[in-house]
Image (tube, rainbow, N blue to C red; front, top):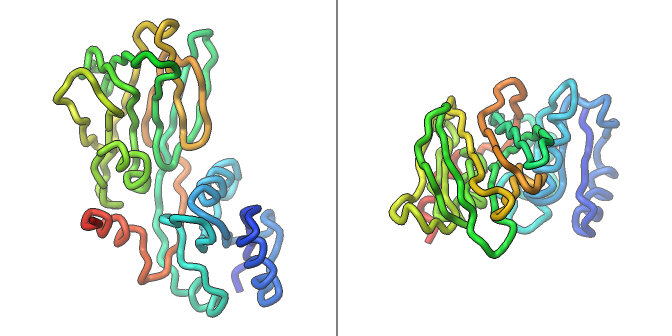
Amino acid sequence: MTRRALLVSPTPEARAAEEELRARHDWVPLKEAEMVVALGGDGFMLQTLHGMLGRKQILPVFGMNLGTVGFLMNDWRLDDLEERLSAARPFTVSPLRMIAETIDGERVVSPAINEVSLLRETRQTAKLEVSLDGRIVVEELVCDGVLVATPAGSTAYNLSAQGPILPLGSSLLALTPISPFRPRRWRGALLPDTSSVQFRVLDARKRPVSAVADQQEVRDVSTVSVSIDRERPLTLLFDPDHALDDRITMEQFAI
């Protein structure tokens, strides 16, 4: 039998489910595991996946939803766990790699599974120069912010910002402005996932901007580079009738 670790969100609902699962199944510490079962919501799944990126051996994760949306999770059910894990379909996702430099010269490297977003810090709009693979494509983007989203993250903040939904196997990234003022008609771009996107903050001290890689924020950035990190792929496990690619496709028909 595959050695499994159980990781649990601190919410009361997840803790109650943990008690039931621990009574029915055998579990091992994370350092001895070959697979992870995670109980919680999408935020806890992102936290778990970020934890995997810090390990020498990245383990597949089967999540069960005890949060709100649970887009990255399977349904919570107490019964038939063994059968579900045996039949689960693996989906591999590659995180983004953000390299941010602050106006004081600090350099921060951080992964992002959903998106990297740049956001204005004050009431003044951000002014950003946008480059693609070293070539300037937008000389001055005046906006509340801008983000780069993966297919797995395209239904999260990206969708709320009117960005496109990307099929999981599309090999694309979404570059989506947030409340753009100029250029007025620019609504973003679809990019090959081999692209490297660079942002330079114009007038960074007067119009400060923060960069956020999923849940990690870096304030007062001057430049940010975003690209896919193919060296640390992550594997999510889904029930055959609850697969992530199907869910992303069906989101395009949600009314």
